Length: 204
Image 1 (tube, rainbow, N blue to C red):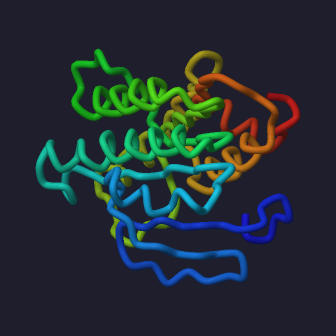
Image 2: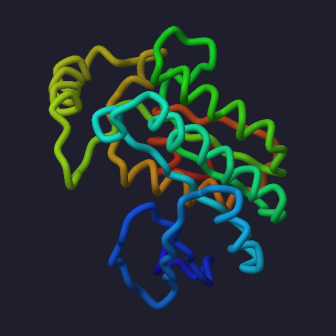
């Protein structure tokens, strides 16, 4: 994005310290409470890309996990609507459903419901399958999942395409393309569509 002339300025709101730097980049620490977010209202943001997320291992409790993966995301969506953001793009997860018996999928579904209720003019939801790529802290469970999905990849065709593992960079590229498409309302893109979009955005 920082080399894309489509974006004149990029504001990065981080939960933790981050040393990224570029001409267009401005980094701010933020806890994503309504009060904290109100400080950014004067910035006049057109697009919001939300990639907030943690793990139970890091969060330690379900309440702490919900705070990051659900509540903070919904706070950001509500702020975006109040600030007249043109498009809100958020990373969710394959299987997100507020009625799911699985805690993780249910939390992601509740997040999506909250984002939709915020009433933003245009909302794009990315539901990737297992995300692969470099991480500062390796996750053993995800590594096992990568191996399992690699072995079953030849079988993941037709309606099962969406279960293929996907690179984090592919999801990011798809979201950037989605931000440029003239669309309104609430739309969901599952993993296989994100992969297609990253390769050929005009066709989605």
